[in-house]
Image (cartoon, rainbow, N blue to C red; front, side, top):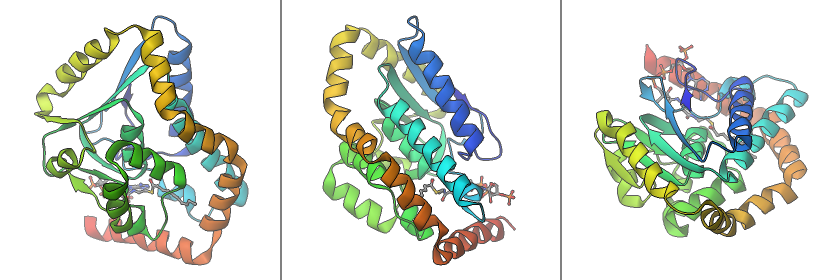
Length: 243
Ligand SMILES: CC/C=C\CC/C=C/CC(=O)SCCNC(=O)CCNC(=O)[C@H](O)C(C)(C)COP(=O)(O)OP(=O)(O)OC[C@H]1O[C@@H](n2cnc3c(N)ncnc32)[C@H](O)[C@@H]1OP(=O)(O)O
């Protein structure tokens, strides 16, 4: 699957819905045993959740948007397929969540590309299931420091921390992703799938059990004037940085 929503592959409601439907179709296709996720937008894997979806909208919209974010993660993290992220650009916040939700991450060896859960930098808090996904990849200590600081780790540091599994030159990324996919697909599906479920079930079940409460929390949080102000200021900062 190639993300192609210029300029930065931000995860809008429409993008998330299409991504989830795409995953569902592949999941139901018995001929498809694995998916490589990458980007068709140069230098950006995904800029994370579309901030405009969280600014100045109705309570109903926030609810619908957050349900779509949850749905995407439940499908990807809970997928029976082998999932490989070929991270060919920067990947903050929700973009990082997508990579973390895959079985294996390969990143282009470019120190200008960074990845991490930087929510704290925006004055918002990564939800518990973003945090759980992060902890399951890098461990508690690294996750705690990285989340509190809202760190975006340049590719070499991301590899040192275990946030990505390996770095390769950008031109070799897809070749490497295909080789990794072949290695994972060499195992019998049922054994690999049951093992994956065993490793991920508790974290998935936690969101399923608290899904409505999580939506309510999001709506309450994002509707606060202080949070709206932080998000607006962050968007302005992005625009100023550009000019
Ligand atoms: C209870 C729980 C409550 C809350 C939890 C909420 C969780 C949120 C998780 C998230 O994912 S929040 C989103 C976090 N994302 C970011 O912080 C990334 C911000 N973007 C960037 O750092 C950069 O744009 C980039 C490194 C991705 C790309 O840089 P560059 O190539 O220089 O592009 P520009 O910065 O010029 O951006 C082009 C264009 O796109 C707009 N934009 C960028 N990111 C987003 C975004 N995430 N959502 C919406 N729009 C975005 C940017 O403003 C520019 O717009 P123009 O109109 O000025 O062209």
